Image (cartoon, rainbow, N blue to C red; front, side, top):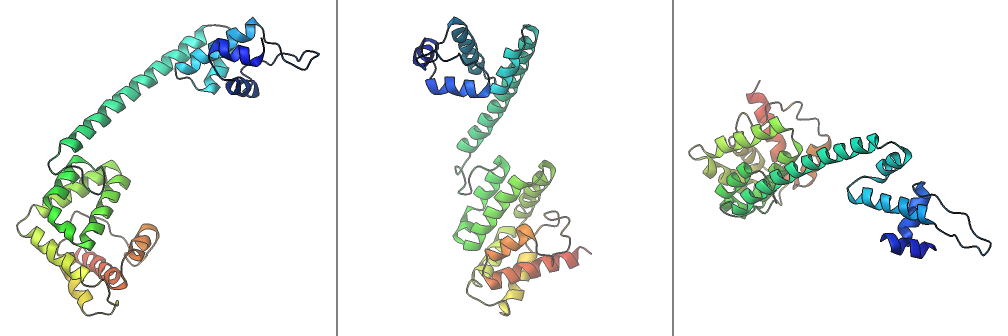
Amino acid sequence: MRIGELAAAVGVTTRAVRHYHHLGLLPEPERLTNGYREYGLRHAVVLARIRRLTELGLGLAEVRDVLAEEAGKDLVEVLTELDEDLARQEEAIRERRARLRVLLEAEGGVPAEGPVSPELAALFAGTAHLSDSPMAVKDREIIAFLETAMPAGAREQLVSSLGEAFGTPGAVARANEAYALLDALAGAEPDDPRVAEAARALAGCVPPGLFPDLGDVDQEHGFLRAFYDDLAPAQAEAIRRTLRILTEERR
């Protein structure tokens, strides 16, 4: 058989056959005097086995290990591990679909920030009117980012603290006032006298458990520097002063 005939007989492409040659999975026959390679039944048997193993989900490195072993014991072991891995994937898919159902069926729909936890989605839905504020929109994006980036325990603490904060009387009104002050600073300079008022208003909205360890707020590295760069100069200064106020309060 020529390579095209071999590939057609097993149901793969000639490109796949050449790739298996390159990886050492399928031995290459010697070239005949006319320059063509002639494949035999043994090549077809091995190629068919490669196809079956890959269709089961084995990677090519695992296929190589199986083909290198003449005993069937190692194949059983590999297939058992594959079955266990598929079971884990099925469980993960079930959990993901359950989360998707919660998001799709949530009152208010999926938030603009994309898929977040059901708890955070409910919080965003309860403060949807704040989305009229450009600064509030940025804040929601940052909160969604933090929920994704934080470890599980810190993520739960973040959402819990925000839920408690916005659940207190007057909390939404205070947040609305703070966002309005920050929005008004969009075209202002850092020394604008309104910066101090905005910082005090924002500090009054931050629940004590939201950022338990602020560290050295004057060390602007990584994410914090990128966050400031995304704001107008006066807004960034207001956030800096807010963090300093919170640091002083917690000493």
